[in-house]
Image 1 (cartoon, helix red, strand yellow):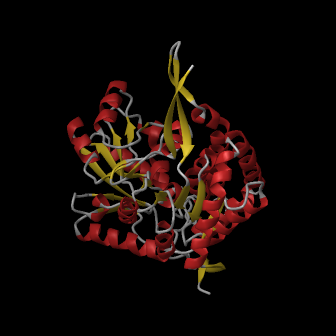
Image 2 (cartoon, rainbow, N blue to C red):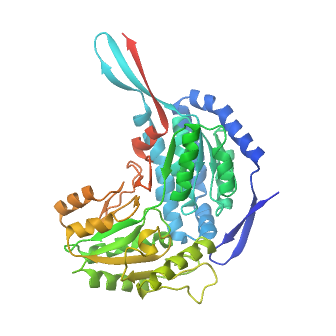
Image 3 (cartoon, rainbow, N blue to C red):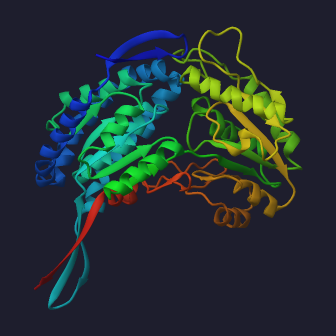
Length: 458
């Protein structure tokens, strides 16, 4: 039986192995989901919420243990892993349960003395969900829990980089009151994901690379089923001339270097007014020098390793391209000598040109290219100079400028100064090659439903 081997990227230590799902096992899991779906739908929303609460309780009771496993298996600093677990995982799970009735209850759209028109939200059926490795718990919550709440059943594949964490998710559902077949999990790399999406399913949910997303879009079109895609990003961060740099410098750092730069909507291109360039660059350099690069599970680590050697190899090739084309390293720019894992120093780059890969491609690591601008229009042109359109960050004290820039930047989400757009009530998703569809809030619930109108005589 073929197996996935899980490594700790901080130390290169082998953590364990998980058996890769066979084609027959994948088919069987989809059949379980198909058989379970009618009853899961028919028990009603209130009962589904009650049963899912039991799963949430299990995750809450294991949060420290699971956050540590996520930290060890993919390299997120432990305190960040715990923060993500609590806020973006458990917090979102709880919000979904508490607000589902508000957004999924039947809606009267028209009524008079003779008739009444009602809109109902019904599940789509069996959904194949594929998640990436960078936020092992919150990615799972974001992609599966709203599906289960609306009445869909799920066959889930986590990334091959975090198979042990995937096993813990499956174990939690087996221990919960959720009926067998409602949540099912398969294990493996892209080949297993490909087998999964070619099964008897009604929808695909995918978070990951744009390349794979485009392939899955073709699969969905051939099957004539809906797909929700949350793909890559190269979010711009614009620092206007009136920005209070001291006030926002921590947010700029956090936007780029949280989870060692491995976030789809992270701030990946910093666009700074020429009058602020030296100040921003200098203060970022100072801030980076105060951060500890080290073993992810150590509580004082600020930046951990990359997830795997292949990610380091990609980052180094992007860096080499930039240096060959004239980029200047302000700080960082190499692997540390005193650490054995898959590490790369937090890096600031200037002298960036549009043909460099660090500008054109998504950079998934602790590297921040910085460019300057003179005019508002130039800043917007630079911000939109990307095939992606997920997140965006605006740093200004001028509210009119904020409104104008927010309208002009082609992204699904905009953050202003120190205010994050990450809330379970807000839609999350992007434009252009960053995908389509939205997660969270009423938008996420309705994305996963069939909408039916029933008109009745009184």
